[in-house]
Image 1 (cartoon, rainbow, N blue to C red):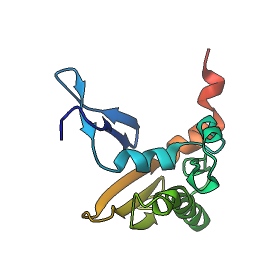
Image 2 (tube, rainbow, N blue to C red):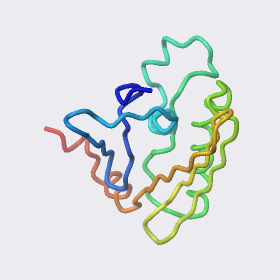
Image 3 (cartoon, helix red, strand yellow):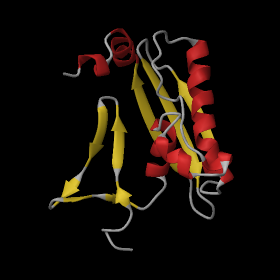
Length: 148
């Protein structure tokens, strides 16, 4: 497989998305990490769903909705939102198994661990970190209201 095949590999970090470049070329991802990120971070009502007739194949999730309080209900909501978002990957057979663990290692953070197994391949483990302070600040002072 060519290093130019696939999609640009986008890594989600606590402070936003990052891409790595080698000699001006983005490092590419031939795995399922981008599919997971698109499933998790595409908002409901995404216009591209209008082109998809099968309701089970439409994407969009509440995974990254603003959460002001981090408590047990919030952790359960995050896990349920991740499950709902990634269900399409099971339905379309991009994945044969998905395990999701959500925890709160300290007061202001939520970690989502996703172990996903593509059919006939080894499982991949992904970690998404959510900074509660960023969520709270965003809900109090939304970025779209600060745009000039």
